[in-house]
Length: 334
Image (cartoon, rainbow, N blue to C red; front, top):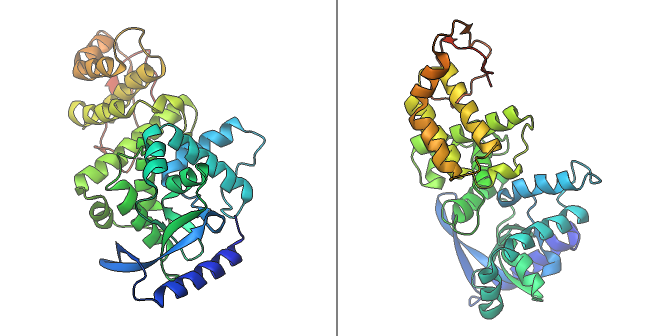
């Protein structure tokens, strides 16, 4: 990868050359609430840099650091780092290898749409395609270039529009999706309102809050497991439906009782961590949620110990802010 100064100068010269000709291609892209026609150029792959702050690879980056303890924990903080760029390409190629049709189609038909890049060569959309094109020996990538004044918040929204709202079919990890949405709301670089996020994602406010609450439940599971913020934990890989079902159960079975919410979470967390030998995990979880009142009644029958819930942590997206004590014995609280 060329250094940033070389990338900026080369991209600038090629954009200037492109815009001088009325017949030069352009690429239509909507941002700032209107359509823009970006100049399209061809660039050697050396003049392109992967976007390290790429929501598609958040979990994968965490996992890579965990299995390579020799690396510094902040290895991905410097996007100009050759090490970070090399690892990012490796992660992207693993995604490509898991989609053999994607690589074969690219080999047969070539690049359909231009990659969208910043003025200094960072790929906003098309990171996987670029890694795949490099793998099959392509030297030049067609790129649509964003103007220099596009800021971090706008880049986030462009990525969200191009990759999340429309393109989940392209192997977008479900936990990464939720983390990306929460970053849009809470990261100081973006700070999007609920209205802006809903517009970008083409979802209702209710669905937005539902997704944020689901991520809070995942955080609770990781805390319970003793691995705070370790989103690469492999037992999350196939648990999307489980957490969706748990979210519904928390809202329908115990929306006004924080203690019952935490007890239900614990039952489901135990099932995720210690999966039954027979039957689908999803079916076991649904049965627990469906029959939770009966389960709780059995557990609390003839018990005299009262547990207070003042110390149970609550989240901003919890379906209820009210809780009461509960008569129970020999059950730990999350």
